[in-house]
Image 1: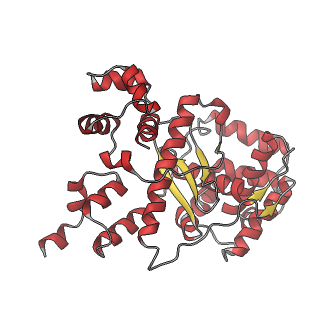
Image 2: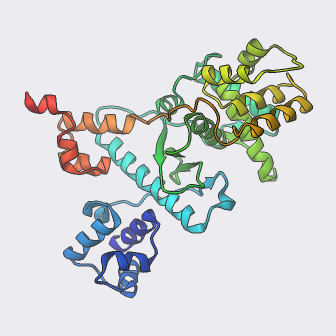
Length: 350
């Protein structure tokens, strides 16, 4: 177990054996390799050194269970180096392990929401992906209103959310345990809020839609894009805002849609094309205009990211109710014990 944890902690930080050896200073990469293969066991001093070098708590190496994940699919996976893929997978696995352990603390006093079943909506085309988003909105009783906080909505429906960092090419991924009982949408912490929301909705589409095995990957991505756009900005609201047919649309109208529905201007524009409110020529012209203004990668009025709150809320509730020690809370939050102790200065003064 320790050998597996040492390797995973190294992958978590994106370090090679040589880089870790240099960081520690008094050990060779061959000796570290023996630790990872289980050919040798580190003593307590080495465990502390490894924890410091890998920025994990010593307790990490002694967790009882290793979460087995279902195959992970990333957006832009083919462009990500293998090392970066491993970093993201281990970051997601680590967060999911801590999340599952945290929910188990409350198992006797509350039930956790179960996520929708994987592939619960069969979809064979982009139009059916649009219908799938409408179906999910009905099942979740959303009506046609804007989704104020998508992260909160996902967690209310059993989809865990985590913000990761350290891999620039990463947008998002849907990670699940092999038994599909626990699902995590992992997002890049440093993306603008509107991009994070779209990515989260896209990954939700990957989870709930059953797409044909023989459908080309590019078309699968297009279906998930269509699902995400329809979930965030439903057809009825798009038509109410823009009408059913337009010859010309102003950029300011797209910005207003962004403010109202938390989608990028480009997603709002794509909704107009998908719903045939503007024709292909109009869509292409406006896309060129957006690119010319430098807005393709950095739009006006970037939204703040949506920070998941459920995880930390559960930790502090467990701490307040005496369900865990300060040390255990610090391990869950991956923070120093002092930071957790000082989190509620008013209560401490009392």
